[in-house]
Structure formats: C-alpha cells, structure tokens
Length: 108
Image (cartoon, rainbow, N blue to C red):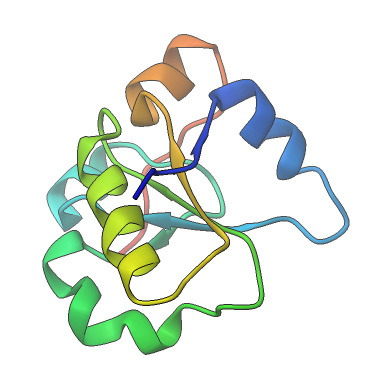
C-alpha cells in the first residue's frame, strides 16, 4: 500500500483553500511545543489507534512529523483502516521550515 505524499509548497497552497485540509501533527508534545505548523492539531502517533475515530474519512487530512517517517506510518495505518484521503507531508516540518514557510510553538 503506497502512502500519498504532498510537498511543502503544495501543502501551503492547500491551506489557502476555502476548505483547507485538516493538518495533524503526530510528533511528541515536547516536539510540538518547540515548533509546529500553524493550524496543526496535536495527535501523537502513539495514541493514533485509540483516537482514529476523531479523524474524518470524508475530508483531506495531512499528517506531519519531524522528517516524514512517523507521519508516513500514520498514513499507512489509516489507509489499512479504510481511509482514502490521508496524505504525508514529505520531509516533515524540517522541509517545511527549510522552504521558509511559517512555524510557531504549539500551545498544548
């Protein structure tokens, strides 16, 4: 099963839409407090199986982490559970920041 990837510039454009995708940060709360993508919602990978009912199947959902590895795992898991509109931010927040896109600490 392949993971659908989205790059930082494409995600930035998606976030400008009238109906932007849901953006979910799967890192640890400590990582989120350091820097996050604005509008990102916290959902650490370790609790994803317990809280996947909070993720809508009828909307585009983009997952991100530090480098894209954990968020790819989240996408793979949800795809196996029947989710079709899940995307992995390729390169994670590191790549996002490298492209000069906005980051801010997440209040948790």
